[in-house]
Length: 248
Length: 90
Image 1 (cartoon, one colour):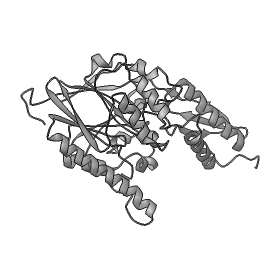
Image 2 (cartoon, helix red, strand yellow):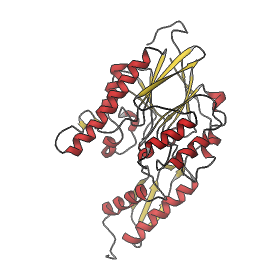
Image 3 (spheres, chains in turn purple, brown):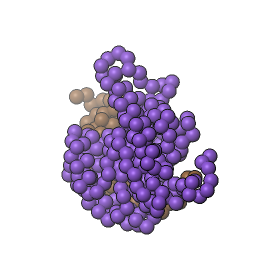
Image 4 (spheres, helix red, strand yellow):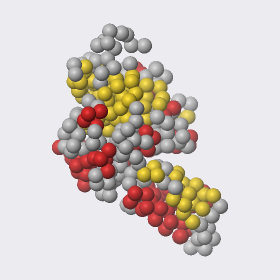
């Protein structure tokens, strides 16, 4: 078995010292890998990123993260990444990594993602430059996620897509319909379904729902901390090959 | 500035903008509604201090634009409880 702990939207600020660390006291015993689905900081400053690093100091299992929109607010995402990387966190941005868990190789492909909405009610790259830039950003994120998933699948037994924004509407239920275009995009789901994955984890939608599925049948989990109501959620991603049965 | 309260949609927009941009709050996940003369804040935020700060920011906007209105702080704080079931995914 491969136990994957995941949480997003921990929003560490200068008033958060010790809070996240307290919630991760037993994660080394409960999971083999910790995924952080973006919005690790509140304002995206390097000071806050250092605090995140401090909060993660007791975590001995591998930690893999993507940034969220809050982590970009300070316009210094590079410094945020640097602080996290110095603390041993693997930060993905259209890239991938693998973690060997007891002989099962878990591949994680990650990207922040972006908005745009969902089929039938989504933005299109038409009109003003700002609108084209908005849609192009999502297309770029989706393409990089696709390529990262395809690449990591060649060297992994199971693959996970790690995002901040949502690829499906189901995990947004509870949010106001009017803001769906700011919470995710169907382009992300299309990229995941085309490339293939065993699980999709995202955050961002604080008022959303926990469970969904892509049109291609891949499970999606919204692990935004306000949604899961715990310090993190644990998924046991079993390896069907190791257990002698096929994937449904 | 007029002493008359802003129409509700504009008041809500001013509060949401302040919660996103004021350095004490920096929060986009707060649901703000108006019931009569009450401005109600709902959602889950990271810390107790942020819960208090968000209500302060909202109260300042209300005082400036909707005198006579009152902020009702129904915000929750994130749970750091490590419990919860493990979901098996075959």
